[in-house]
Image (cartoon, rainbow, N blue to C red; front, side):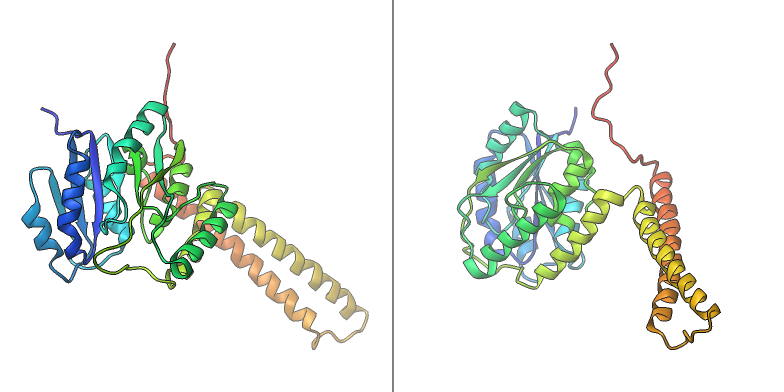
Length: 313
């Protein structure tokens, strides 16, 4: 008999002791008519979260406990790796997302042929200055930079087809950029309004300090979007431009030197030498990045493409 479930629900948990019981109740009520498994990943909690999860668990529950805090992205990745469902859903453990939205999202995904349905917090219950405004600014920057036009990148509530979730390649702190990773995989994605509640128990694990992490991760995503499989196009292009400019400057200075001018104390000489060195280093970096990329794909038997369907007439 197959152990495959219809849905795998993944919830990263960290110090959510007071939210465990209401979370279990909400999930069981919302998914009572669905064949599902409930995967909770404890990301290094220091309170009684793990014991509470164990106390309330049943045959549907799978609990993964990290030996220390690794971050939300890693917790989500571990849950996805353990999932067996045809569909995979992710949700926060703080009860701000509502599990009752999941069956509606599943129906939308299956009936309309989407690969990912992403939640959009229509009436977000968070502070204006420290949560909503920074989030709106970040969402705008990400949309304009990546060309992936979603309104709410920060909503954890999402439903995926299994193959999309399993091939996201989550690591570091890239959970904020799941929609971009899904688009890079080739997924068809849509947003829908979902409910959002104010946090009742515990405190948020996020503050303004994450803004700098988001911006640095955004640079990584832009690189991955355009140059993941062809890094030489970036580093080689910059390197050739720098090397060429350096050659022109130094050739000009050579002519001046041959004409008897003193060039030893001219800042232009320093600039020319720096550009030459930078050009060589950038081109060399491109070669190394290209070799690393090839090793990444070939060592794991990965391909730089994904096939949705093969049809034989």
